[in-house]
Length: 169
Image (cartoon, rainbow, N blue to C red; front, side, top):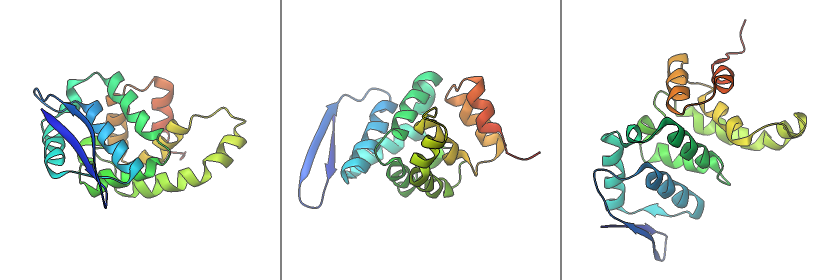
């Protein structure tokens, strides 16, 4: 049994307890990242080592692409998704979660958050914030990395085409 503890400056808060089988489930990994970034917690050492071990053992491949995408887009739906991705890069787990996406993606995401409302109004409410943030995350990625991510997250063809569009003739 592994208890997830997150430490704040003054108090320790137990978030949940789970049984470990082969690897830490990806939904638990994403949840730990969401809670840590949302509430300003840091992830306890033992939990972080289990989290990294699960990612090294490719726990992402143990779930369907649909589920991986759904869980990933929940990260982008956080009140401050840039904080989640800052944490991912700070913990040096980005190569497992966003392979081939450069560190500039967190700054791109922060800029996207700043202009989201203007963008949403311009498109008359016909836009999806999570997908807009995904576009900003993958903006500086290579075409190969973009193709891999769109396949891994099982994006529909229309969304794949939007991610792959370079804007160049």
